Image (cartoon, rainbow, N blue to C red):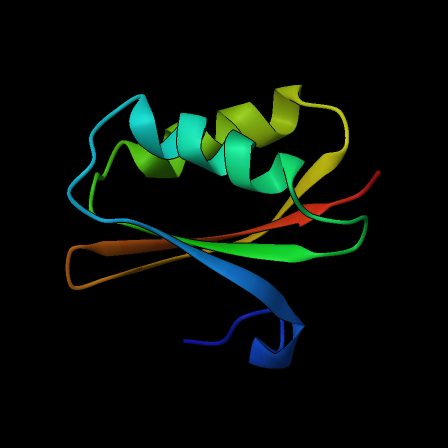
Length: 84
């Protein structure tokens, strides 16, 4: 399981385990708003819907980039970079 990003690049981790749609996306947006350009937010979720939800949100939101998504053992980890 390789990720495009070095763990040193992660600026902040957001734990939304146990939260269901739409909370992971709402919490991700709130956390990204508080970061600086270039920062990477690691989002740890247990909602399988978060894979498509966060991907869709990132694709339709200016200023953010979905760097990677990792799925394993019922935990879904998303890496989102603030680009502006």
